[in-house]
Image (cartoon, rainbow, N blue to C red; front, side, top):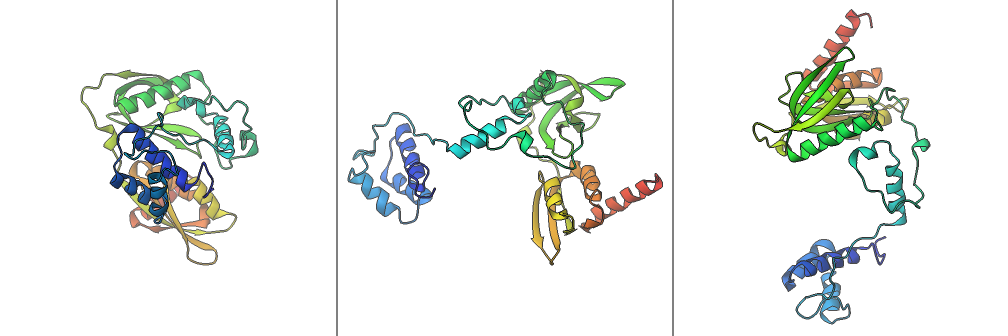
Length: 302
């Protein structure tokens, strides 16, 4: 695709130049800067003369363009097929995605083409209308930095009314559930979206800079013995964490995972699920959490 007339570097560079020319007047120094930053280092000796000499009749001598609309990037057939495949995901309706124009496109794959192993079977009801409405209300509140009043059902026997500030939504591939991280909730920082009965936005008493909020972060170091596809399974189960992996022996790998402190309990449970194939190297605090968890399981006869 490097030299393709519609998808190559020169097309991208000229599209940027023309977008800038359509929006406002363009100076020669700015023109050169765009070429040097987005094309090849020697492209300034090709593109600039072609524009100056009117070989490419896209800019006049004052670097104005007769084009009235900014150029757009056409999608490839492969990109359209991938978008069609994503549009078939049962979770896509949660985000109000416009899939018009893909009606006659053959999907690159379908949900029937793949299976997810080691996933719990009681995932969220993503196609339920009430669930969709609650999910979209949460998204709107996060974007507008508004508080939420949630009717929450921690178990099947009782429900409670919760007022909180929504911070972020997180999807768990293993649990097949969305969780909401909150602030100002006395019942806990993490709420399962699937256990919400209703949800509505309410005025916030004080403004919070939600976008700048980041939870405390830590990292752990694991040593993985690559038997029975252990490395592949580890990378899959921790796919939503920032991680690094390197080979340290023929069948051993070092995996470093960065995580939010709020995810620590879930992380402990996931690490233990791999048994002897995964060993926690550090830090010592996380090693102690693993030991305590094992002691609890032993005392319960597990």
